[in-house]
Length: 395
Ligand code: FAD
Image (cartoon, rainbow, N blue to C red; front, side, top):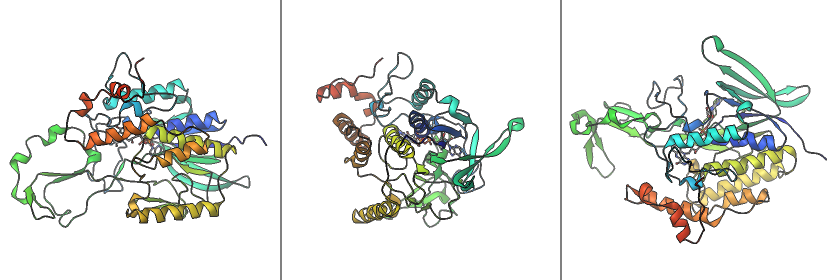
């Protein structure tokens, strides 16, 4: 039997959505990418705006997608941030550091979209507001409702697809710390999602107000003007109308077979980019290849019952590790089992040893007290010294 070619909606055009579109097209599918913003890049599209509710508690607020702050430099060496056949090169101009600033990543993603002709697949400025199963011509399909904001160009509509791939990112919906007195505290509070530049906070601690006292669990205390909640994010899919078939419970998106397919809806609904910590570009690429090949029939999923048992086994494993439910999509550091499992499904080799080792050393560096490690660590030189050859990214 020949390959099946289907019409697929991809939600998002960040690191995950772009590679999903490429892999779907490579496999012969027709991909339409919905993108709320007017440019590619997702998280890497720096937006100076902050939300009207700095803690992100008001569901009616206008959402700003990116959590990027102005001075951010990547914390994963660029050697680990590219796709398998499209490395994050050091160019003759721009920011050629091993740990460049955020704008360099945006240039990389724009280049990827252009070089693979993906821009023509993207409907810019189209926010997806509803994804729901719909019967069309006697077949189960997906209704994807979208809206386009902005003056005369404002529009709305519904399109029908055979499959939906969700790539909407996981760093937009703040998760805040809850502690007694949080809602009555007089000082300013914000989530790191709404942090952009430091100048607003310059000299503030030096003028602490008496009502700004904070008491810690060990009973020590301090006075502060501002609390910045750096407490992570929630998976959030406000557009999914799934009647309980997939839900988010305490940051567990489930049930999902191998973090990608809801068993009862597979392979027609899938999620890219959920697990962490990992190499986001490479993980999205592996998951996207898997989805594209399952949709075309080249790869086959286990039965729904088998996938559900696998999900239950995974939940059991999380419990055995002593991890809370909200760590369901956390990968065990240093094992790379998930990435290699995906590669194996696809008949690809396991991750190269240099990637694994570089990631682990990078993690150690992050934890170290050396504030200059991003500038003092010559990654290419380190690889040569470690006997991994020169994985040079210079053009
Ligand atoms: P995103 O980049 O968030 O893209 C999601 C896309 O979905 C966007 O295009 C958005 O517009 C779109 N979208 C969302 N909702 C809708 C909707 N309803 N309708 C239509 N479109 C929608 N990774 C690294 O590799 N190295 C780093 O150093 C690094 N540092 C980071 C620092 C910060 C502060 C943050 C927040 C993340 C960092 N990351 C880093 C992780 C980063 O998230 C990934 O690199 C990558 O951007 C994830 O891509 P994504 O496509 O999954 O999500």
